Length: 361
Image (cartoon, rainbow, N blue to C red):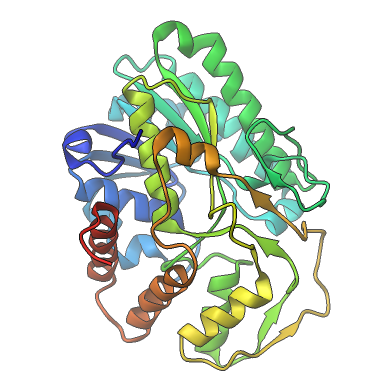
């Protein structure tokens, strides 16, 4: 069975509350949902990088944008009341592993209590049909044995970020069973892989680090060049989220959590391999140097198995492998050429939709 997650007739007029709309994935999601006719209310902190996709693509011109902190339960209640959502996509988080070591309290506050505050406020949202809480591939107890994690594997987390997201999974499951099931509101979690694409400017992330080094004319420094990750393009990941959200809304019998990542038979790329591919696609020499100090511990191996999402939703990635790198490089080249980045972002969304429909190769 294939659920059409990009069906404009489904999204048109739907009231969507999207948390984290000022972030990398959230900005793409905001623009995409609005382009499909959804009535989107975004709630998040203000962008914390310069540049940022939220401003480059004028996301505020497409959605009802509200800035606030998930740790402020009154602010969360107010935006839920204003949005009167039918569907909620909860993407807001403190998403950085290294920052979580510096600020574990803030990380647990945003990722755990922020989720509690949102779900608590949504208990009183009368029009609510479905909630999708986005977590991460890092929610699993990773003993670094090279296994590809499946949805039924134990949750855990060495670093505060991973642990906070695993805790958010438990919070979500508790609220779903305690409060939302009896109302017929479907609640689930989506565990995405390492998402890359144009418009990411976050600290301590590989693709932004490559772009910054290139712009500054400085050597690229890699913390863990041999680390392997389940890289996937942001549009593939979001297509999975949208498909899952639609299926939940329509009452399709589904697991309470699904992985979204690259094909299970594709060998995961190391940091060094992806760095070389991105540098080459941007027309730069494939040169990097290892960091003298890699900082706090980060997992060296991470793989997730996304076969269940492919089976129950009919979802599949359109940009696995070389196209993923080509598309993100195209976006950053347009930025470097001082292009209209809202138009470029919408162009990539439209091109993706054609691939999804099988209208082009």
